[in-house]
Image (cartoon, rainbow, N blue to C red):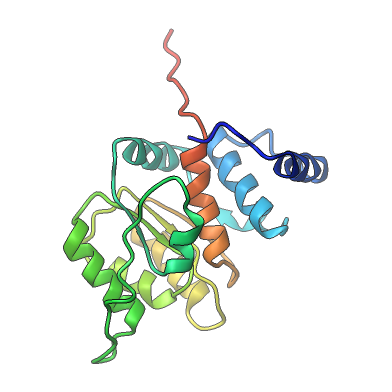
Length: 195
């Protein structure tokens, strides 16, 4: 977890909070929404993001326990600054109706196995491939961008029942995908209150 926050980032969050009140959201959900909005300057994500607090808690617990973080492209990996990531796009070869991104997902899964946290911010084909494999993820941050297959891949992710963060629209991208993951890494875990 990060402890130092630059004054520009503090100002950015103050402006964001002056424009929209997210205090009603559970802590991790709020952290994800705020960091995605902060990274994109796009308030539409407030209503567009889809997730669940329990799913986010489980994903954060997996991260804290050392679960591997797998990204679809290097731009997503570059945005995750406090963890090593696995990205096999450079080794992947397209063929037989399979894109490089989908092939990279296969290569990464062979390496990390079940229980990883997957972050897809670029390629809908990577997300479709991830859904088709039995990856048994701890969490999928599925926020690919584009006019071809992006919204459909995220709909398929939600329908799959996999633990996920996604959004409804065609928007997404590397910056917002890494931002969603960083929110889980930067936010202190909540302690369970017992009575």
